Image 1 (tube, rainbow, N blue to C red):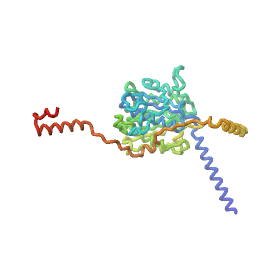
Image 2 (cartoon, helix red, strand yellow):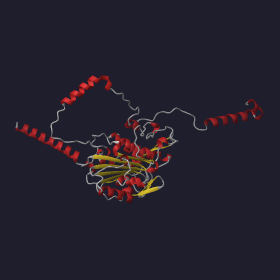
Image 3 (cartoon, one colour):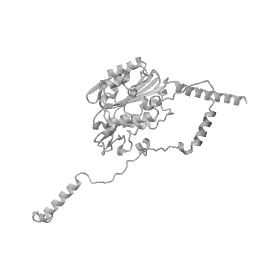
Image 4 (cartoon, rainbow, N blue to C red):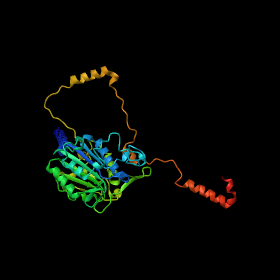
Length: 382
């Protein structure tokens, strides 16, 4: 009997310690809200993939719970309305036009020539004119976890904005330091998909900052998913595998940042992805991916007793009285989940003769005719 009591008490102790560990992990991040700043810095049709990169991350963070009110989306070009787009009002991230990441509810905050180095730095530091609308502001505080994603063309220590200006790694590092001094973030995750991307986080010196890049200094970040119908590459390799990784994440997922670091090995990316964690105060293995890509729920703790019986009964009586008047019609998009699209085989296309086949066939017929009958019988053709 004593042995049974000992085992029972030990089980209770283990279960209570597990609960305490889970509670400790839940509150370890110290943040109460999430924000995302997603930036595509490239213009022109041949940079279609950079817009698709940004919209793919935008789609993922919205699915995991960050609302549009907490997302600042900056797109340097409007690929959905480009006259070269064979499918207007769409931006695809997978071959055969199977996944439209533009969707029906995209809210672009900065578009076209509004996407400049100055506006980007003003959004980060909060130095915006008083007339700037709320949707164009990063209204974060010292309890905010912020995801910053950049994609475009870059080099050693700089990222180009619209082929007309560039931001250096020193300017970016100073902007993050201003954010820290002004208590505009609790923890910050910086991701960049560009050539020589690791050079952009070399000068960072602000605390509680973690950075990831698609390539090392001296390496190119390569494109992926060419589509003959659209005529360009649809995504970059690093963001493609990042999207594939995020599709398996749900709001209650326990996946941590160490798993995110392995998202695109060199065998897939060709380039060598890099990351920097020395400025981050927590162990990356204890940091959940949803601490940055998801959204926390606000909880109000009260010691008062609340009686929910009467309101629930009244609600049920009202719903029974109204009957079918309360019903609404819902419609669902007919596209496949991304996890199925990525792994499925491409569709078989209808065969059609290659370019110039018909013209070459007629030329061969005429040559055979002239060889056989000569020019004197040409009148029988016309």
